[in-house]
Structures are given as C-alpha cells and as structure tokens.
Image 1 (tube, helix red, strand yellow):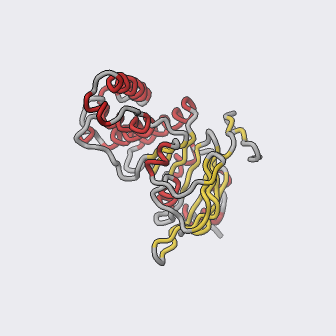
Image 2: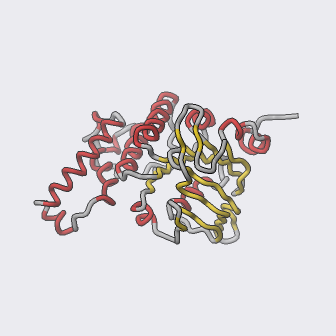
Image 3: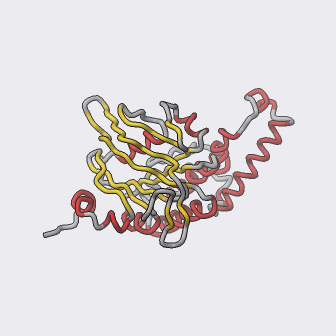
Length: 271
C-alpha cells in the first residue's frame, strides 16, 4: 500500500495522513530496556494494533503515547508538531484518551457518573460555580449529560445507566470504561487489551463497538490485543514487538506471514 498521503483499505475506507509518529523511541527503567529504538506511525482514521508476547513492551509503549512514561531517547510527533514531555492530563486535553488493561473505574459510582468524568476536560465552569450549581454551571452540566446519554445509547448500556459499576459483570465494566474514554471525544483512542478476560460473545460485541466507533465517529484507534483473531478482523495495520524491539509492521496479512513474528509470537512450528 502507498502511505505517502494515506491509503484505502480493502473495504473502501479512506485512511489519512499521519496523526502520531514515534521516532526511534527508547525507554529504560534503570538497567532494563523496555523499548529499544522503535519507530512507527498511526494514521488518521485507522485501527492500529500493537501486538507481541507478554513482556514485549506493548503497555510501556501505550504509556509513552499517553505521557505516563517519558522515553530517554527518540521523538514523539503529534498532529505535525514534536511533543515535549507532558503530563497525562495535558495530553488528554490534546485529544488522546485511553482505557486500561486493569479496569480503572469508580466502583461506587453509577455508570452515568463514571462516564461523566470523561467530560471533565470539556467543562469550563470553575469549582466555585460547580459548587453553587446554578446558572452557567447547571446549564453546562445539562449539556455534558446530554452528550453522555448519546454515548450510553450508542454502546447499548441504557439499562445499567444508574447501576453502580462495581455490581456489573466484567464485560459490561469494560464497555463502561470504553464509554468514559469516548466521552472525552478523543482524536486518538488508546485501548489496552479491550478483550482481555471476555468470553466469545463479549469479544464479538466489543469488536463491533470498536469498529462502529471508528466508522461513525471517525476516531483513530491504537490498541493492544492478544487475540489474533480479533487483530486480523478489525485492524488495518499491525506493529509487532518482542523483547522491546519491533520485529514486524504491516497489514495483518503481512504480519501473520512474517516468519520472525511466527517464531516470536504465534509459536507455529516450521521446517
């Protein structure tokens, strides 16, 4: 595929220019190298998978992208500008949201209230105005709640909107976490193992929602996923990591036929 100005997927979707580019990223923790000299890009409108065996450095890479870790070497370019070291909340304001491998919700709060926390970067009322909760603050909360209700409808979780998330089954908690990330209206959505711990039916539902988010909202998505069936079904391009190094990068078909990837990740015997 030609990547100069973007490309067209086999199903006819238009993938645009580079949104984020990781250039020669190296991340160390003391004497341990978690990521070693890795470069790849993420393009507007695509679903970009990051795969590899346990300990490959995938979650560390996602933490670099959303500013939780700062690499010792390399450059991060976002929307055409080099990004300096920033805290995650500042990066969230730039349009990058994420979910986590281990669910990070407020268990005592309802589904609705958890998703509302995703709107915080869009709220302009001061703490004093919110405490008084009259006039502009009340109007603003009503506007934000309306947007959250649309996400609740989109993800088909109307029946649990008032339920404390700590009472929900695992698959629905994952969906609530996705809803909270979507509430931030991200340009780039980072998903850390969104299918982990799910049964087949739950994986099918989550895959459908990820595809719908990409299609209907135009959201660019980067995800870590171990299920190769899911990766093959929903990803446009895949970058493969092993022991902190990049060993493959291309379409799902190119990656799954890469012998180095087969050796490191798939464990398929060969002559």
